Length: 79
Image 1: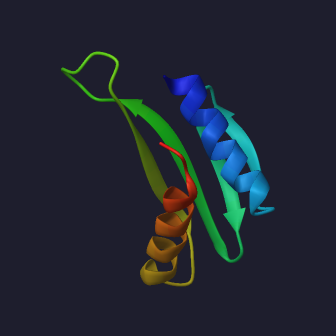
Image 2: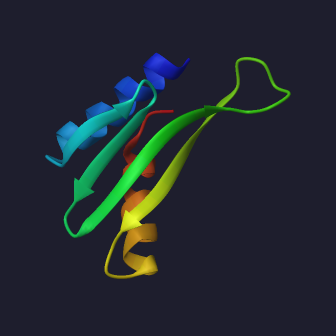
């Protein structure tokens, strides 16, 4: 469920001491070092009660740094 996914995103960001703020009911913008990104919990069209986490790059020095940061954060989540 989206609230549980949001809580898990918050847990990982807090654990890593990254600053974050809610930008919508199911989206969080966070600053992870030099990477600024947004996580959004989205429903999967056609599948009821199935959700995904979309990581959007807002700014970062390189695409590889953004990818590494997202992969690390998502790997730390208990999904």
